[in-house]
Length: 310
Image 1: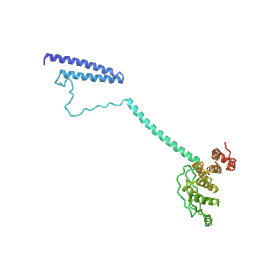
Image 2: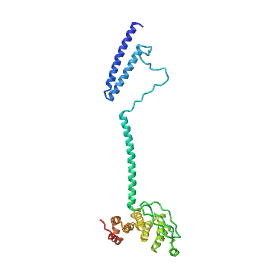
Image 3: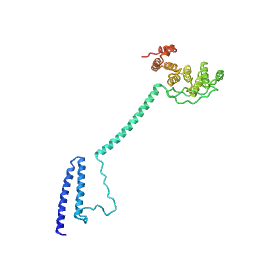
């Protein structure tokens, strides 16, 4: 090797050492600066390193591996990339995400439990659970129809009545069922005739058939109200109350909605529930003031005298 080459190599080596010394100082200083400054220092370091390698290749065109690593290695394997470990902030964020997800699940569960408890309390307060099922058929000319779920709470089913005697069946058969061009009205009228004759269990069955089969008929408000009265007259105010409430809530403008609300108060009085009786009476007076002072003024005042309301 000529003396000139040795001089050039020595100069490059000293320059390289100076650059590397500066890089070391930058690396040490970078540990105490913020993250943004560290990123800038890394970029400068990578730039200086690339310039050093370019200078080495220019001075040593042979690519001597003693001074720098070749850009393309002879092996066919790909260099593995080191994945930086998660920082403390990343770990905290991950834990916060997990906590938030757990809180959301707990909140949803609490809301579901609260709604379920509220529904149970409402059903317990109303003293009712499900719609009264149709009793065992008592009338040979009619058959019960399966009812749809009521939108309002109704009373616990009453016990199935005993089978009627032959004399009672004969008396019931004496009551004629109307036969007109309005079969729905015929069903209601037959139930009314049974109720009017004092055959309350049979009237309950017949009227139940009517309201289940023809819920949208113009007579439906009469049928639900009369069904409640059939239970009341049979000494079953608890079974009557749900039908009065259902008739009132189904159509508050119905022809017999005021009657049902007033009868509901009467049923509550019969079961010694003065609180609900007062609520029903107050709503009756506010919702139907004209009826309360007119057609139903007598029963309304009579029921008011039976309870002490605030």
